[in-house]
Image (cartoon, rainbow, N blue to C red; front, side):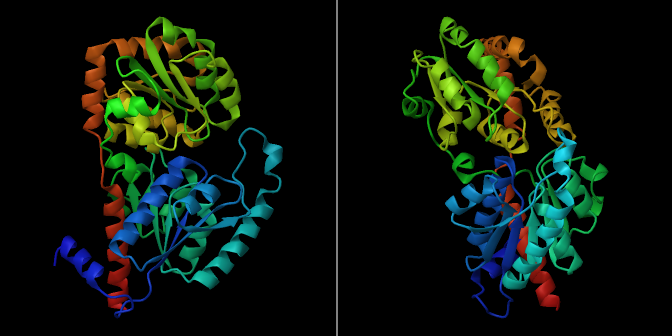
Length: 388
């Protein structure tokens, strides 16, 4: 029986028909780059096995506590914090919080009784997967970046399977456990059919003008925002439009700066990203793993400005991977004030480079990673249950 036939049999098997209940915990978060693929995997699991019970575990006060319930799933929050690289004194309470989180995790497992745990990155995933591994429960890791995070590297040694976005991850994980799947992306983006005209109408912008999209990540990007604010007049002078996602901290400043400019659309967060991508001729973006994956699927010409303080500088590694394939361009965050606006204007006016980037980035797109990951997880669980 091949893999597809296996999945058909799983889909057709009635709930409780000889199988143990499929209860799965998905752990991690902190940014959209961890949360959105986690939700995509959850949706794929439910599509294959509708009776599956899925519980998310994240960190209290982080954006997963808002985004996961909006997607229709239950989430438990841990009293945990990550290592603060900028202020060592703030890490004094870290050992206490880690112990507290393990106690919380133990209670969650006692109540929910998961048969498997999926980690998507972020410090809240560590105590959950570590506890699961200590109890012999299957653990699966999705590593979205081309440079693995420390938690995932530590957890990978005892993980059942590790799903990666790119090749060359043997330097971080046991090679025999790696499965290259790409990054699960939001279905609204993977299957979007929004036209450029409809998208620009959505933002109340002119369909006959070139349009630049700036997405500094779900939490915003200070240096990108400040560079745009300082040079907003250059967009109008070059007959260009800007769709500007600022993040909450910079929104009021950006709104004031763009107040008298009809060609600048500003908001702190864009819920309908499929419209933003469809409207854009070129994009300014951080190079978190999910942004990179979505831009590949949407075939967009991109100027990456990696966040330099991301763990292990993984955003620079993500961007360089595309730059080396002539699929994007990149500038340093520290150069943004002087170089960002001139660079993006030059890119959007260079039709040949636009087309080259679009074609090359599109070759790297993967649209079914969520389904591939979900199928493999369910098969692994059911194979063990059948053998038991």
